Length: 86
Image 1 (spheres, one colour):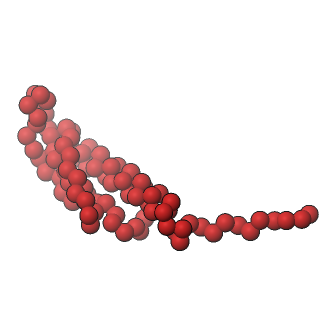
Image 2 (cartoon, helix red, strand yellow):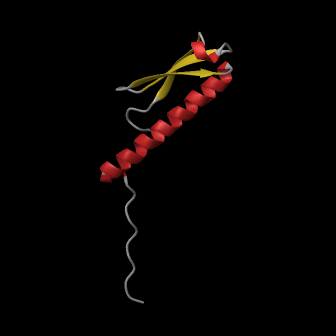
Image 3 (cartoon, one colour):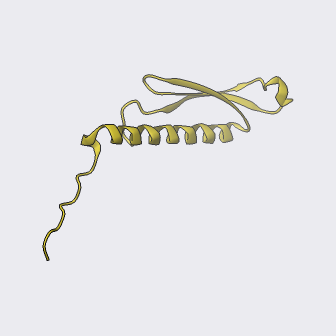
């Protein structure tokens, strides 16, 4: 997918668990594009948190692409010619 302001995973780092979590392995991650930066926390292994962050990126990029498709007619595929007659 090649879109402007495409989101990407910037970093993933170990972090202390929230007080209510009672322990476990926690990671903080950052997702960003040229305009917005988002941070999140998640319990799990580094690989599980990376997978989660990548899924978030995919959903954000898909939503961004759909939004751009709706507002920018140049991105839309031309409609096929309508057949008339027999």
